[in-house]
Length: 226
Image (tube, rainbow, N blue to C red; front, side, top):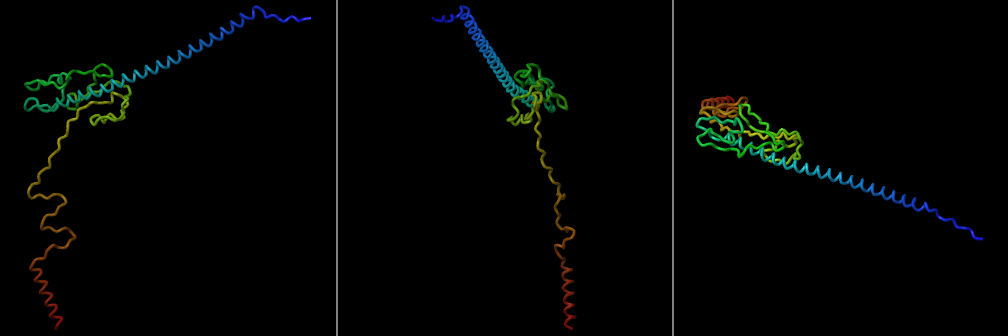
């Protein structure tokens, strides 16, 4: 007598196929989420890198244009205007574009540059005696460059905002020549001839004093012999 083997039901095969399909869809969805995350991170890094590149470029442009304006202010200040005209700072950027203080107009600045960090006008720095002696940016962003500046920009070391970079022209101080000594005057710490410092022996003895001392010594010897 044979025992009938159990026959697999017809509904078991579709159930197994649907389970496999669900697992595959879950794996695909997981891969899609991972890919989206990676792309988002990559896009963020790329955007941050591009922003840094743009800011660094503007930073270099700021150093160059600020230096050009400072140089133009110095050229205006040191230029000789009409005879008898005192040295002075420009009153506006127009004075740098066209200096009319002399018969022949002079141009100190090529064009009116804008602030590279903001794309707007600079903040002008006024001189105590009047006029404009420099410019600075109005941006409060933190610079990438913190050291390694040129000699004229050495004050920018350690500054935490672009608005702290002041492109100011400082007139060079002229050396004062020494005052000639008048005849008969004595320099401090020196001794005039013929004078004696306190607490020191005389430098010379007169002839009369020497002769008197010699006679006193002779008389003393004569008394000793008697």
